[in-house]
Length: 436
Image 1 (cartoon, helix red, strand yellow):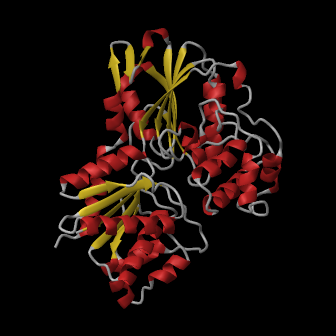
Image 2 (cartoon, helix red, strand yellow):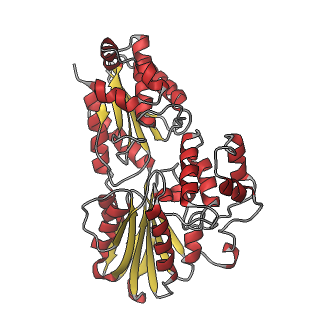
Image 3 (tube, helix red, strand yellow):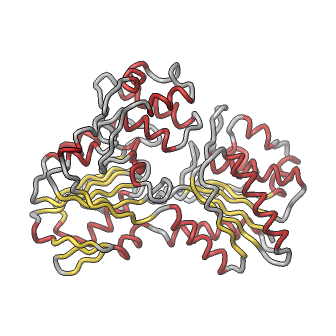
């Protein structure tokens, strides 16, 4: 009988290869003489004295290399901020910023990018390469009272409190001169193109890297409401709470007197990964159901619904191999001090539930397309009931590991880890459930 765990893993890895940022850019941007064409837009490059690249996020290096290769000598200057050292030859300056928490390099990157953007005039074409992870990697606090340590504490609290990415970004934008359109305001004197790889819900460009480019009014009660709803006042630094409680328009105020000159283009998002994975599974003979409704929410709730859909699909088509695919980003509140992430915890919870139900011919995979899950070195995991049952025979109790958010250590001992290394991409998570 086919090992469904290996099949699910194969579908995930083939999907990663198909949505590589460099191949996507090569397919969506064309250089025709001195005219850059993308979508229904075109930019005559001869009217600019130089092209400047600015990238931030987990995909910035691959995006930067693809654009540099396409435009060649026309790219004169550039800064690409990423989260890891990678041996990718690029002409632009590379800064490795902190992630998931900002570090000193994040602040340095914010200063350097702000200086570079302000040095550009009307004869410069700015090409911004924006992808997920940029929120932590590039930072410039809105107030000198907010220190790096304040930012790190704030990000750590936000990531672990169970808030959605939109709620987290409301707070981040209010604390930054870069986010919430701040960088785009600095670039208002230049023509700019924004190329996006999205790690948020489809169509939501304002949440990618906390929206550095597009006009947006930040302020009012919404950020403070997040603090209240998740009881964060006593957990956040006083300087941060003070800024959030101010009744102000925020840094992005002032857009009303300036036209936005950024042309945005979405290159890739989670729906592309889901569609590609579904095509891969169908080619292997699976009847596939894509669940667009399972995007965000508590990981246990999403897991319960996912398993229910898979079992219903199998019941409807008992003689076929079936597959349920979803994406997005579940919430995984952190209560313990273990090693893992939302993807591994999703898989361990699901496989443990299957084991309790005595259902063995199902497999569950959940992985981050960035190749990184939580505070571990894995992209995620893949498991079935048999793996959990065998682990219990060796005194590995899944419930204990779940209680301390220690899913990575469970899978490291029991098997099931999916390790790709940083992928240079980031279009949220992919969940693949299979039955035969």
